[in-house]
Amino acid sequence: MSEAAEAASMAEPAEEPRAIAEPVDAPTARRDFGMLWAGQSTSLLGDQFMVVALPLLAVTVLGTSNAQAALLPFALFLPFLPLGLPAGAILDRLRRRPTLIVCDTIQAACFLTVALLAWRHLLPFWLLMLLVGVSGCTTVFFQVAYNSYLPTLFADPRNLHRGNARLFFSESVSRSLGPVLAGPLIQFFGVVAAVFVNGVTRAVSVVSLLGIRHREERPPAVERERGWLVREIREGLRFVFGHPLLEPVLSCGSVYVLFLSMIDAIIVLYCKDVLHLNASWIGLVVGAAALGFPVGNMLSGRLIERWGTPRTLVFGAFVSVTGIVLMPIAGSAGSAVGLVAGSIVHGVGEGSFGPTSLTLRQTVTPQGLLGRVNSVQRFLLWGAVPVGSLFASLSIKLAGLSWAMWIGALGTVLCLPPLVRRGVLADLRGRRRAAEPAAPTS
Image 1 (tube, rainbow, N blue to C red):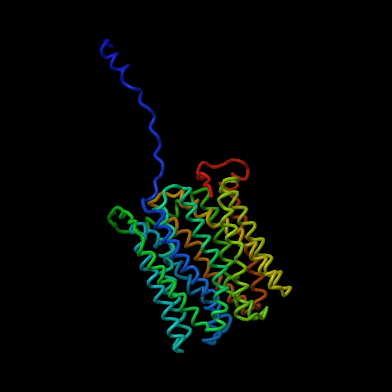
Image 2: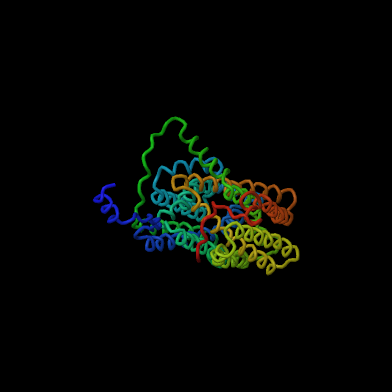
């Protein structure tokens, strides 16, 4: 090497290793999340009005039987079976926010129509089922887009988990406050008023979504070759069932929701006909039972930081199942207070499990697959709800409300074995998987 070249090489600074770029949130992420949070909190509250209002509307206004009223969740969640998987593949090619706006608008129209026709005594049960089913179809696309939208605002996993925890917190509060408010509203103004309020809250959600400033990038245009939908659905399924953490979590959730949906379908009727409570007390029991959810939501970040994601999920599932099993025990003793206490324990467990599993799904899934992975989750979990509703209706018809409650509660225990496998089991044995995301701080 010449002296000049050698001197030049010595003068050149050594190349420094490139720093890994930190994930950057959208510029208006905090403000836009506030709009999303406000609108969703309002509509979630309205949804919980329907938990009390729909079965009472069917029984007291339309004159249906308990077994028929228990089929309303079947109509609402049945669309997740045929539409759940295609929705993810379709939404991975669309922007999420416009989808949310359209879906919320249709749902507002459905429930305002139900309220108007019921008020005019022009609502047969078959039409109620049909309108609830239309709302269910839009719910499929809304939920898949909703769970895929937040990562477009928050790229930082810690901020993403905080956002998920806050949305779950709103859901938890609405589960507590919604039925408590719905009870007196129904008592004094009638069940139709509660349905009308739900329609209005959906309209409020539409306004909040329209106020969001951030605009997602349009997904890259991909030529739709023949059979593209089937191929993309298969790709999402392959990713989920091949993942050492996602598959056990979703398998556990499917079994859990199947039997929990039996309890959800009959809890209002159980309080009315077994515990002989009026509308105000039913709202109080159903609402107060959800007080554990905010506790679990707030604990989730600290538990992940201390134990890691898989152990937090096992803790949440075990606590939730324990609380559910306590509910029919209390009901058999005629104790509404004991029923509430058992459900509070269940809420603590589910409140920690929910945001933890969602953040796991969002952080280990590539953005281009997220819609499909979320659709697999909705297909497996929410698709189990209509099956559980059918089980509830058959159980009521064959064995009565009390036995249906026992079947649903004891069945949730079966969700634990599918969870403690593969990557989750490896973590419990001390072999942490690399696929697990970094623990967020709360």
